[in-house]
Image 1 (cartoon, rainbow, N blue to C red):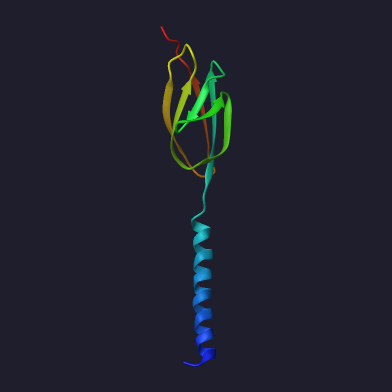
Image 2: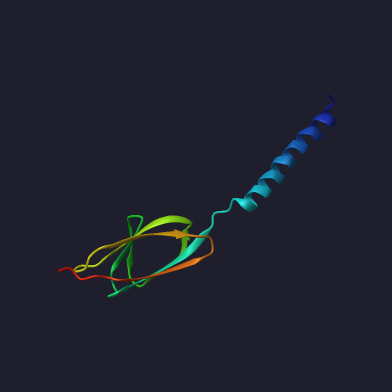
Length: 102
C-alpha cells in the first residue's frame, strides 16, 4: 500500500470516529431537572441524598435526573422522608406539612 492510500485510509477512519462521537453526544447528554421544596412551618433543613442543602423554601435549578431521597428536618417536628424521580427539563414542586412531636 502506498503512502497516499494509507493516509487516505487513516483520515477516513479518523473521520468515522469523529462523526460517530458527534452523533452520540447528541443523544448522551447530561440532563437535569428542577426541584422546589416548601414546608409548613418554613425554615426546615432539606437534605437531598444525605447532603444538607439549606432551609425551606429552597429551589434547586439543576438537579441530576433520576431518583433522589428528600429528607426534611426541623426541631420539634417529625422527620419527613420521601423519594422523587427527576425527569429531564421538568420541575417537581414539593410542599410538606410537618407534624409536631407529641
